[in-house]
Image (cartoon, rainbow, N blue to C red):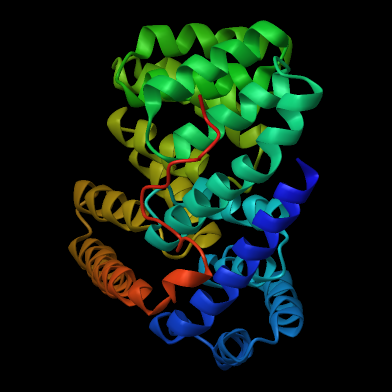
Length: 332
C-alpha cells in the first residue's frame, strides 16, 4: 500500500513538473513585473523561489487570483497538494467562475483523493474525513449526485459539522432547491451562530425567494462576520438596490469592488444604481469598467482553451496527464 502511494506520488509529481514546464508559457503573468518574473522562475523549474515570490506578492495583493494560482502551481510542482488545494479553494471561493482556478482545483482534488483515500479508508473506512474527501472530489468533477451522497454520509458520521451542512445547502441552492437549502443552512447556524456560510446561504435563498427584507438582514449579518467578503458586500448591494435603497446599495457595491477590483457584477450593478439616481456619466463609467473586465475574462478563457491544446506536449510514458474531467481510480 505505502509503496504504491510513494510510486504514484513520484510519478504524479514528475509528470506535473514536466507538464508545467511545457505549458507555462501559455499563462502570461497578469499585471506586474513581479508576477512576470515569478512565472519565469516557475518555467525554469525554480519552484521554491517562485512560491516564495508569489507569497511575498500576496502580502500586499491578497485578492490577486493570478498570484495565488502561481503559488498553487509552485506548491503542486513540489508535491504539496494540500497547500495547493487550500490556495486554489480561496481562488474559487472568491470567483466561482475562474477558469484556471477551477481547472487546477479539479486536478488537485483528484490527486489528493488518489493519494489519501487508500490510506484513510484503510485506517477508518467509514470515517467523516473519508466521506468528506470523496464528496469534495466528486464536487470538483461536477458530479453533484455523488457529492451529495458522500456529504450525507459525512454528516451521519459527524452530525454537528456546520461545514458539511453548508456544503449540502450549497448543493441544494445550486440546484434551485432553495427551501431544502435553507433547512441545511438553518441547522448550520443553530450549531454555529456566526457561521458565515450558513448566514450567507440563508440570505441567498431569501433573495431568490423574493424575500428582500430577510435577504438584507442575512447579508448584513454576513458582512459583520466577514467584513472583507466581496461576495457578501455584492449580495447586500444587490438586495438594497432591489429594495430601492439605492444610495446604500452604491456604498456596499463600492466596497465590494474595492475588495475585489475584477468583480464584474459590482460594476454592472453600480451602472444600474447610478442610472436609477439620474447620474448617467457615472453609470457610463461603471458600465465601461464592466465591459473591460468582461473582455479580460474572455481573453483568459481563450488562454485556458489554448492550454488544453498544449497538454499534448506531456510525454505519455511519464504517466497520466492532468485531465479536464478526472476520474479517481479508487472511488467506488
